[in-house]
Length: 108
Image (cartoon, rainbow, N blue to C red):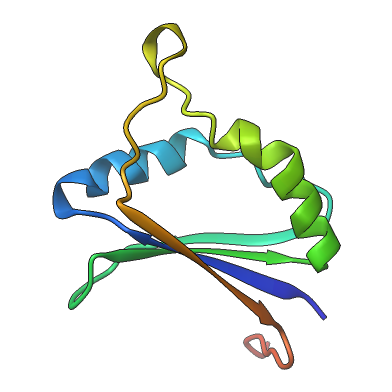
């Protein structure tokens, strides 16, 4: 079964729009990666300043391969002048890892 990686990003309220714009600008950077299955950026509604970046992969090996190659380009900080990296929108990050042991989809 698949594996899920959830990157928990602590994002101050004044940086939320910046974070969301950066993710929108990176659209397509992970979708063509071997073993990639799903992506979602989850905005907090209440009670927390943590965004969840949900990705699902065919295997741990596929995720590790993406981390070692394509992820560096996706997080290279595009849009900065003359090679400068923009200030991170998140003030902290934690990576959670899970194995999918059960799943369901809507019927019909």
